Image (cartoon, rainbow, N blue to C red; front, top):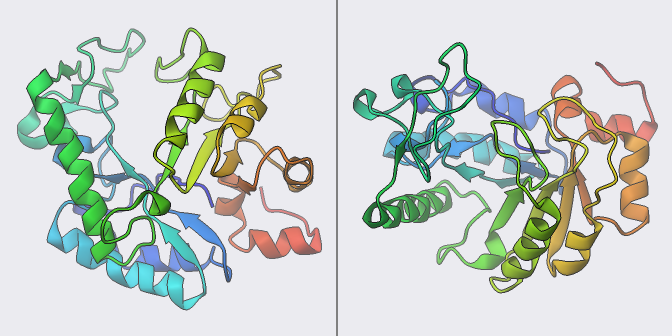
Length: 270
């Protein structure tokens, strides 16, 4: 299951009902990637997103992870920092979001996002350390995404080089994806989770000629794709060797028993 923001973690603490949400979508041996989980106070994009930088957050994740394990599932925690995709109401002391740039969104008529503050060079190690501590905290919560030494064989990455939302489009995504694939091989991480080029925006599928195959061929680890897949074209992608696994998001929301429905080729909820 692909990571999907639920925004039900009041006070940035996962609630007990979250265990039911993940358990309903757990099958023996199935991989679930958690919703985006903030690594620090400055990492939050929206209200009520979960975090993993405080002790009470770690303790709240433990029964959720235990519940997934009791159903035979494997649970990875998606660690993230929202950067400029945030509002000062979601930031500590009402400060501006921190980012790699001080450039605000050009198209933000409702002022949903506060113009960011560009990080100073000497502040970058702090963000890196936030990720390091969050990974260690995930270990304490017994999530498989990291090991005690935060080894690369317990780490995956999710990339969207062809995405063009939140004004994130790249001028040369083909070269970007190949560079990232080859660079990641140096770290021997467990998997690379890529969003299909056809998903240039959050919810609309576009016809396109671009393909993830060059990156698939360049990356040495496990390759996972996502983005608008059905049962049929997901099976086809695996059969043709274009990916090792296919992650599903929206279909999993409407169909908690999605693997069983796929197995039986049963109708899907919309």
